[in-house]
Image 1: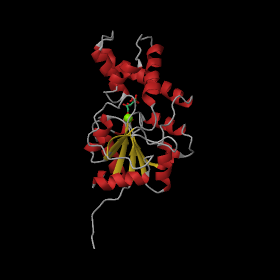
Image 2 (image 1 turned 120 degrees about the horizontal axis):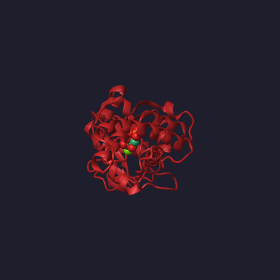
Image 3 (image 1 turned 90 degrees about the vertical axis):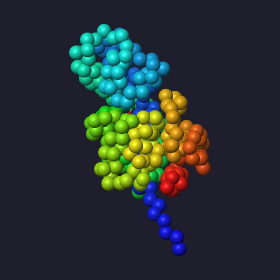
Image 4 (image 1 turned 45 degrees about the vertical axis):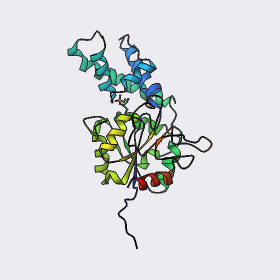
Length: 259
Ligand code: XBP
Ligand code: MG
């Protein structure tokens, strides 16, 4: 008889921005631009330029980086205060955009969450965004009570250094009392993938327009999205996709093959 020490898959840990929904281009970017207008700053971040700024995780950090790298007429001593003001207005604008239904959930996310929840897998969120942004997204989900499905949500307020630092994933693992090897992370960006990997968590990546050129070497699998019935996911890299959609059985198989 053969005994093995293979670990069971216990939890799925989801990133938010770019993974649950394409919030960056039509959500965060638009909200920043609204704040710039409200404050008469005369700045506008277009879609391509915002893609470059996404190299810096976190809205406040991104804005400070922008001011440091570009010829903006704001004295250095006033920048931290301006970042706070812009971010407050931006966060309000983001919530309004979400309530207006500006952003749809990405294909297959709600399907996979429903399946995983019904099969008793632990669900969690690990994001660098502000907690209220997560709450408003979950409130707007077309599935009642979805927020209660998540055993823990770690957001910007819960750790000090943002992705690719593994702090947010370590925070989730500690709260769940699980090892990285018992979980799979679902991410969309290189920074997110590196954060999960550094916490010892195998990662499935769903790329988007901002992240498809990122380096995901070492990810369990890289796919176009999680796939819906009639709208199959496309395999991009890593372990092969053996069905039309990324479902719990496929995740368990990738997780098993990793060990
Ligand atoms: C993505 C981010 C976020 C948002 C902005 O995080 O970098 O910071 O762009 O949100 P993730 P805030 O993909 O890890 O969810 O302005 O609230 O920081
Ligand atoms: Mg992301």
